Amino acid sequence: MRLSTATEQACCILALIASRNLSPITNAELSERMAVSPSYLAKITRRLVVAELISSEPGAKGGFVLARPMRLITLLIVVEAIEGNEPFFQPAGVVERVFKNRRRAVEKGMSVVQEKMHEAELAWRRSLSNVTMQEIVDDALKGEML
Image (cartoon, rainbow, N blue to C red; front, side):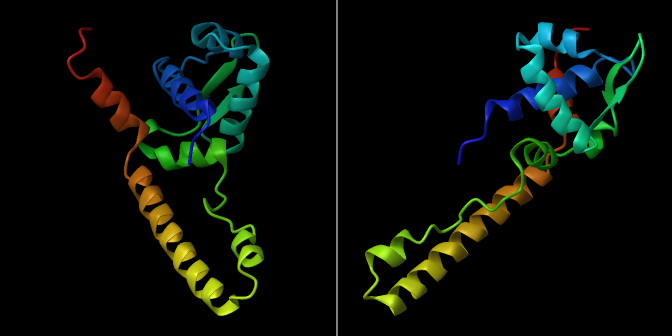
């Protein structure tokens, strides 16, 4: 599985917003800092708004602010906000077509494959749910000079 670059960009957006200490940051500022087109960035921020990770403050001094503390935002929440939460493995029926005369073996084999893929996905999701954005920022800033 490969995550899109939008997931990394979403993490950056959250870190940039958090660094502003409740002062809103505009889409234009984010776009400039991240060297990404404003229209592309708007798609990512929209997903973060829908996931209730950030909110949009209207007005001349408006922009984006965190909708919840970074300590309550896990990597899993960010990934799901950007990538969705569909199962990793969704059989397409290829094995059934290739081995149509071996129905029982296919059923047994696919059952094992689906079970193992599901177990791996659960472990991956569990791991991501144990890491908060605050922990990432804190670890990144250790040893930094103020």
